[in-house]
Length: 174
Image (cartoon, rainbow, N blue to C red; front, side):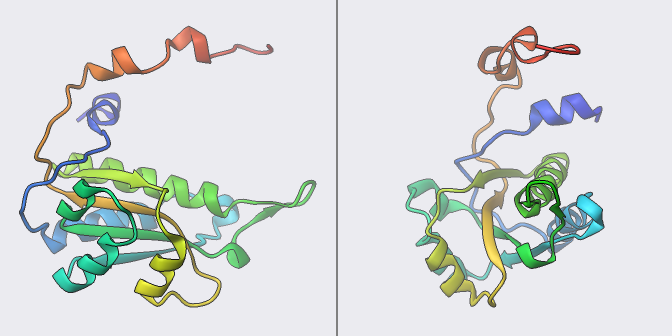
């Protein structure tokens, strides 16, 4: 698949089939995150896979949306701010940026494999930390629901729901 076609195919899925996701596919998705670039190659991330029914039930309590209970896999993408690169002039820590790049790689790999994802940031952080028994210094940045989609949004939605190219691109200076 050509890259722009793949990028347009990816969407935030909120309806999943009751179908197990194969470990081989999960591993490919995790590998896509693992090889993502990061500032100064610090790779300040940890990926936690939840797919066991009992553990999923606990994870589903960390984000109160009915559709979230349907997803057969939850990937918790965590950052380790102490290991991330920090820009000197303003002390900007790049954990969130680096983790976001990894997540983007993972969502696109999932799409190529016929799976769907939804990038979730509005979750109960303390509940996730407790549920996953995260060690000190490991912060959950985002949850990524993962599974086979039970809905399919039209690729052309990008033409209708995205800002016009000329509204967001500035050449040289404002």
